[in-house]
Image (cartoon, rainbow, N blue to C red; front, side, top):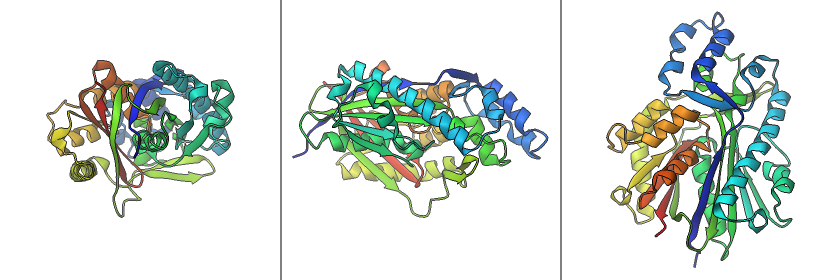
Length: 350
């Protein structure tokens, strides 16, 4: 018999450099205007994105220096380890759990490469036990926060009292490219920010909420929807299909099927919560699930205040929901490369 798993805490962190969207737009004009024939038309994305500010691991001027893969990945390792320690420390403190009580660490990140992985680099500063189990995960992109909860839940279910720390860290700004004169690159420049989030999950009762179910759905022939290219200068973003109409058409049936496998239906959910991939994606999701316009208020607020931080963003939304009073049953959902939808149902603790 599997053990019940409780969500004990959620915490978030951002890097030190706060940038207003107007500053990013001005920097993009400096970098792209005059070289990009469609720039005057496409630059409106900075105004229509719904984003007011974001956070970055480096100051804006750094992105105008000569950057290749080594420079970007060096910044990734330094910044990601610092954010790992920051958000993990907060999550453990909120759960009232010491680092040496953690039995496993799941680390989700797709915006850089670190071997040894991030949790190994942070272990001495955190105070993890020598026998802690390490599960570094790469490639989940924006779905990583929700899929990470699912992975951590399955680990926690394995043994009574098993405690799992989930940490998601994404430094999306390190993929900003001045050499790629494409619409996808410009949209990414207007959309993505850096951030981290962490959760503590433990088998047994108590905590904030019980994890009732997890689910995942991957669509056929969708490898071109979202992902990375890799070259000597770093990662380059892939957006080969429009995601808002895809979400509007396909997310409803996929989520309904995942719930059905767990014996639940949409009528059982008090709050549908989503990774806010972008302003148009949020609006498309409201349409897909027949929600009143403006229902996804926390999603829009997180997007405005932080931008799309990839994997951690859904956990920023979850933290906001917890702060304002978690409904009886919440379904947290995200989409990511694959193309995949991932969901977790959380039932508020009594």
